[in-house]
Length: 374
Image 1 (cartoon, one colour):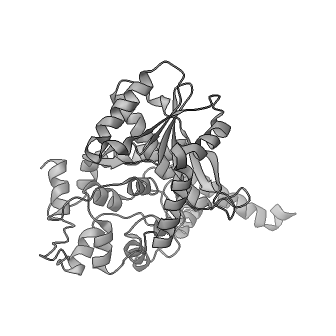
Image 2: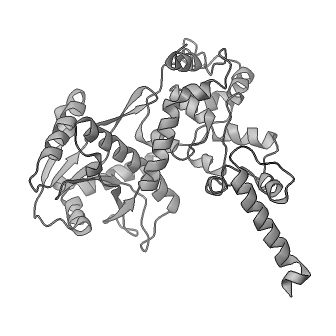
Image 3: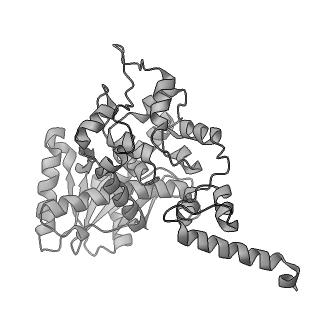
């Protein structure tokens, strides 16, 4: 059976769910989770699955936050993006007084993707010094055999032939500082757009590096609605995103770890509500290894189910994902301590980190011993 047929069987009778930029960005937040890779690769509605299992995640913006975001974006884009152009002149040192402005949305949804390709093909091949703002372009990205269509806030074509993704967010920058978690999420989402635009230019025969890894993040400053812009380097997010998407295109290796009869099908009834026994679905999902970490609570619909599973398995001391990645995949405090004192044998690929942990434990003991402290 082909990989695509196995993914279709894994999803079952539910139509595949389309990926948007926010969902794709969340993939980069946990590149080592087999459960998530399989569910996303098959296009499974994780929110519906979590709700059916009795572990709904309180995701989604409030109507107030959505309204606030729309008002702020309209302010930034008013009068042909005049306010945005002011910030780009300062941030990117644009020496030209005016730039061209293309609102790609005006051509109609069915033509937007083709029109976007034509505009960027012409812009990337034009050797003249031009500056252009592209509003509502429609990009695409292949996700495990499915095409996801993406709409960045704005793409700016800078003098000298460099494209910059512009991401407009409504979280505030207070005294020059913004919420690190919000900035990280925005950077991951912007990296999705950078990757999609680089792929488009490469398909058209242009240098993909014409798309800068520095994205423009626009947020309200302090407690007013006055926008402020800053450059955010998304190279790290791009590297993680590429690894995860490559992993999802090689899903056959992950599928090999599941019996062929396993399915995550919700078996929706005539009213669209899942009919599959909850215990049966839970057992099927537990056949795919999760990589739960506290960070999942802000990025994945399955977070509460996976957290409950981790607690039942006695993993109450899970490390955060950044620490876990730095420790070569060591997941918990107990595992790290076991490797450090030699009570636990390292798994394949953990030999080097185990050696470092043992050295750290030896130094700790020397520092705490009477001889070491004298």
